[in-house]
Image 1: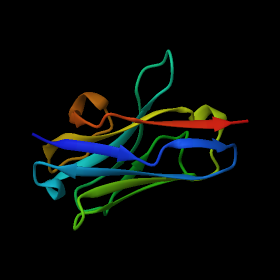
Image 2: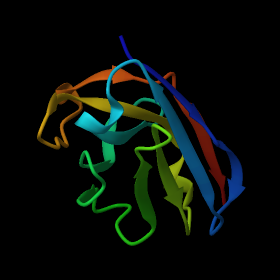
Image 3: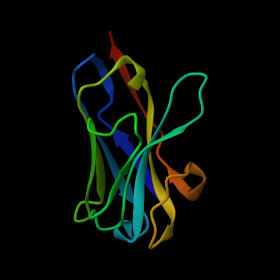
Image 4: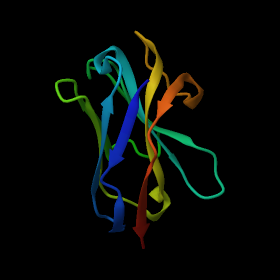
Length: 125
């Protein structure tokens, strides 16, 4: 069993920044890639960013590339998402998730088996 707990969401003006964190417990955190996804009202949950098991490789959705940065600290079992230059279209519930498999990093939400409860990010114009 894996528990993922997100924090750091909130309300921010366009152009501002937020940092999301996700604390993991349960299985060996550093064996698995981690991802951030988001879901806006009426839309499907979409990929935002992912990071491989040791933090050496990262992936981003085109919509956030250059603005968001994913990182992890395997000594603290945490993964973070630094979000800069936020736009109103970034408004969504953000979820962290753990990849289903070791040794690979997926961008498809169906390949993630454990999810946090989500944290709301609202960007006002």
